[in-house]
Structures are given as C-alpha cells and as structure tokens.
Length: 94
Image (cartoon, rainbow, N blue to C red; front, side, top):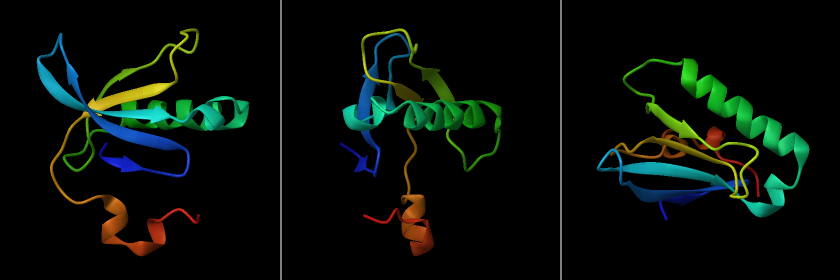
C-alpha cells in the first residue's frame, strides 16, 4: 500500500510483462458502485493519458469497464513526496 484516498487506494504492484513495478490506483468498491464516481475515475485516466510532463507519471494501462475486477489505473511508479504533502490545500476532507 502506497496511499489511501477518499475514493481509491494506490498500491505498488509488479507488472510481469513490463518487468517493473508500477503504481496501481484502484477505485474502492463503494466508489466503484457509484456511476458518478466511476465517471470521475475514467475522466482522471483520460486526463492522465493526454498529459506529458516530467512531474506527471506516465499512464500505463486502464481497466476495462466491462471486466469483473474493480476499476484501476496503472501508472509509472515514481519516487518522491505525495503531492498533497507539498500543499495542504490538496488534501481531501474526511
């Protein structure tokens, strides 16, 4: 486990085909059951797919919405501080 947010968890996972570790963001079950939360998660993946910047992790793969598994986003695993630690205004209210 790398982190827990309001709607998702991020895990360090090994990608066998790429032979490297990735950050795997998984939408929690309660959020995955909400159509609006799924749309937000899908929108996040689409935005990540369009961005190219050294500070933004490369998007590797997004789950298929027809799959039985929970929605996920697999992205490049980067070292560093969580962005929410850089500015407390980015923290989700709990």
